Length: 297
Image 1 (spheres, rainbow, N blue to C red):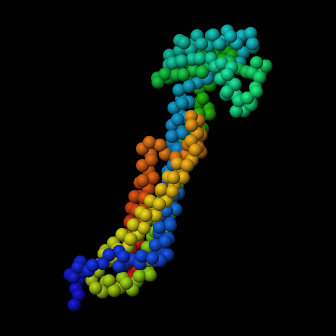
Image 2: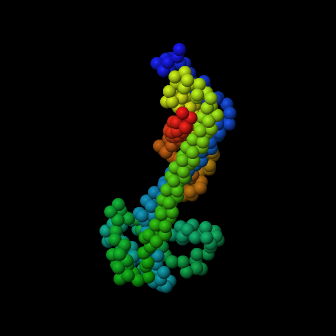
Image 3: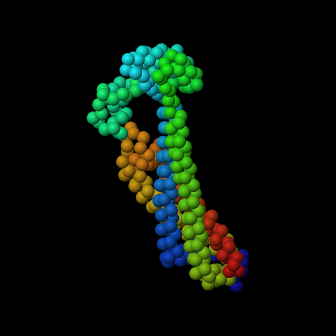
């Protein structure tokens, strides 16, 4: 007669308890692959947005522009006055006047390549690069108002902050999307585990009769569903990584869509996605199995 003491000697594996085929197997693998694919893209969105925000913030916070809109006869005098002020301003590392070619390059995306700058009243532009300590914009504006009334300081604050805020929100959106994708995958795996447990009610009853404990039965389902989730998530992460590698780079330009992807240590994130998917499947299946076994008791 078989007793509970003989239960550990029963040679059963996950293949003996959980059916190797059926819609639950396909559903788990497909769900894990699809969710991992989306999760990798969500993480790429978050990483790219964060890098773009950092680049914009760093680049724009170290530069400023002084615009001189004076009558033609006063432009040169006002320019010399502004340069003299900048040379004696603490926190200013460099100041240089943009030439015609540079101004044409700045205006070309909006006004075209054949812009006749000589016939248009284009303001004189001076690029200011600050030191690591920086300067006081308020004090510089006061000095410019006294020495060069036609000079206007633009430290990029008005249009820099909205760009950086937008990129930061995109990063947060990507992270929230990754969390929601993980929750959806856990829900789908829980449903699949519940369906498998319900379909194997008779098998579970027999296992209990021969002395198998609920934790042994639950572990059998946990091993199978964790392996399915790991295989599916690995396939989905690999496909997403290959898709990201096919996205063309923008080169030196700061283009968000063409820079979508990972760089440096961030390439380790697609490797972590299958591991997190397997851990999610393990926990979800454990909770679902123990809850369903209590109902079948």
